[in-house]
Length: 84
Length: 158
Image 1 (cartoon, rainbow over the protein chains, first blue to last red):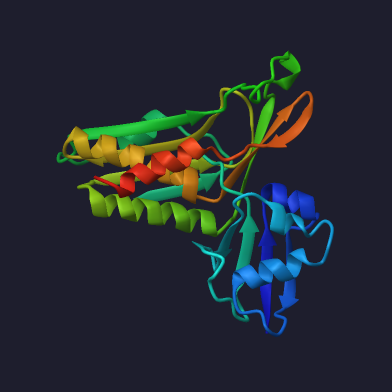
Image 2: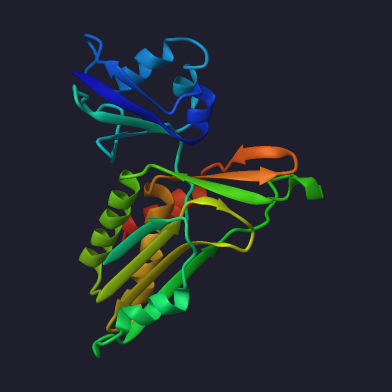
């Protein structure tokens, strides 16, 4: 089972990717660890580590980086929102 | 309660009218309309830095849920008889309407407060992002700390 990962706005542009499907690597239990795993791919993925106040949603609910992630989840990373 | 995320423009007068149509218990409807400004970034003075257009990106699926959750929270805090939220996405020009919030209640106090609460929470919790176009290029709008402060004050008191 895999996780669906989404990126939005400036982060999506920096990564050149809006989404990917990933087999959850062994040892990754939280969205923060998933963020670190992706950021460790090097440029341009380090943007995940350097984006100020990076936000994350799991299954379309905004959550903290210590939130557990499991196979089948939809995980989204994005900068702070600017609607309204 | 009704929430819409759409590219199309809206008719604020018609939306306000619909909140009290056919009922006699509504004593107040408070509404807010947000518009695109032809702003310049901080420190910029040249005409080329002015916003020519803006594109609203959103997280389809989560956006609607987030707006509905905000309205549910408002309904739990105040006595509301109706709520309408519309947020546009896509490319907009200065002067275009972006967002509409209207709240119907028996009395103005609850309507005013809930309308402001919904806008403050929408600004910090609904997954929309603005990208501005200027003659100098495109830039993503930075989140404002003042928006976090505006949303945060609601957690201290009613």
